[in-house]
Image 1 (cartoon, rainbow, N blue to C red):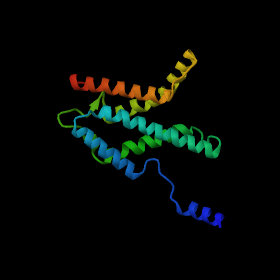
Image 2: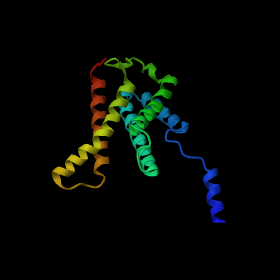
Image 3: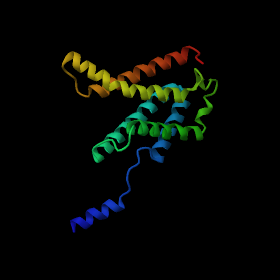
Image 4: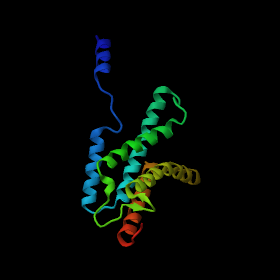
Length: 171
């Protein structure tokens, strides 16, 4: 009886999607609200990029645990690229690349949202090595060190880009 219940639940329950339409819609609503309050697309992109890369790395770890190895060459790179693309492409089709009123849409020739997303994704990759470096130097860590360092980096970059975009014109 238990076997029938387990098999039935495994066949009837739908699997979770890392970047489901509801999550994308929620991110788009958050982007719209942040734009309404004047938050620059670079700052929004920082957090979207970090979320996309952390989601991709999480999915990669789940796949590695289930398969017990990299199933595909460059698996983590492919997953990160796919998740970032599935984050950015819907914003393009939703018209979010049209820019904010009275603002230019690009920085150094790159869309501001894409620029922030790439920088935010990069921050997710450097958070762990910085934490490991501090651990080696001090021979100690504090609780949630890697997470807190990554959040600190994202917050500092958000403040820096907010200040730069608010008081200086960058194209």
